[in-house]
Image: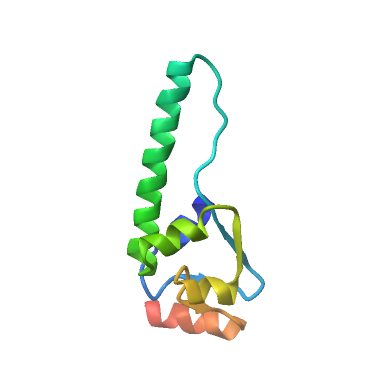
Length: 107
């Protein structure tokens, strides 16, 4: 979802997940109604958005565009470890002490 894009586009090395997190990626969706011309306008916009989002995921995960397109064809739910392997997150925080360590290194 858009939350996964915000997570993935974060600063490399600072994209964290908790072990029980679920992260979902998918293509844009929407419902349109109205005249055919209006629906066509919306369809063009959503296809443009899909292309931009795919390119952002390519940039931040290092995956090929074909991998991103296939992965986002339908709702794709990932565990924290799957998201890390996919390149959406950098580290899975397992303990509270890891959070304290992160805070110390940021000072």
